[in-house]
Image (cartoon, rainbow, N blue to C red; front, side, top):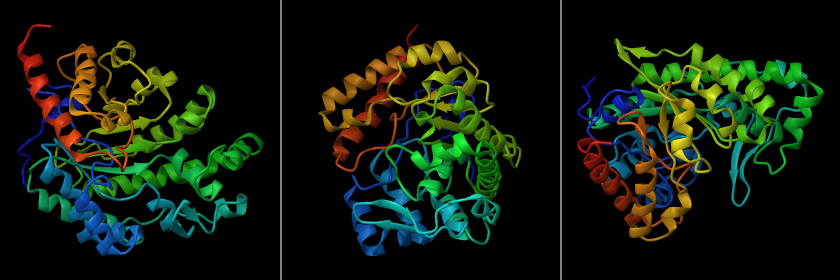
Length: 357
């Protein structure tokens, strides 16, 4: 495959020297872009968009054609694994994702099997290969998966939830059953991400959207440990080139020290912690990714750049930082504010790298 022309994102994740702070944006291919909305309309529905490699490739490339981003991320959904397990994923207007066959008992858990990425999930693997060819070495491609805990919440709740009553009831009343479910999902995540790496993903990220709904003790047992189980099985090199891994647990700042010891190359931060404080905890054990509040992008370019400057100034090291939002970009954001953010992070951080700290 074509060699990378811009490896700044990879170098930052590995703690190597960089000329500027790289930036990409969670959900950078999304509804805030008019070109995405046009492709989505052409697809007919969200699942068709996800499951058609040519369309997934098209929307993955769209933000790169608008902004000078330092990485592409596969366009897909975090719920592909449970969908491949036969739980009947649907997206209903106003309700979000729904599973028509949720996990309700131990028998349902015992009936689960690790999906074959080259069979039930071949549309994702084909999309990765297609995107990698289309990128032609322009920037690295990030593959991803939902975390075992986050996938389990959707599978047991049957969709989104405000109180996570069903999954937490299972956790407290049947911890062994919960552990069994999470072990299956850990193996599934590792198998899925390894297939993405084999198809051309140059970094991978595990999204733990709902890890922060757990107490610190339960987070370590039911969220972090299953992610580590998956991480330990990942192919961390492809053709002798390192493939960095990022873990992102929203709302889990209480466990940054444990995350730093997880073996991940990068740790995603939400916007509820000062990056200087996070850096003191993590030190040089991992790169930090983040952590602008996505809502800042509702403001003006001047406000956006001022807030970005605070984060860049607060980060105390010359490398080991990937700029990002603290969660996914919102649908109502003006793309001009995204351009202002990307350009500012590049320009200002270049001056930081050449000035004495």
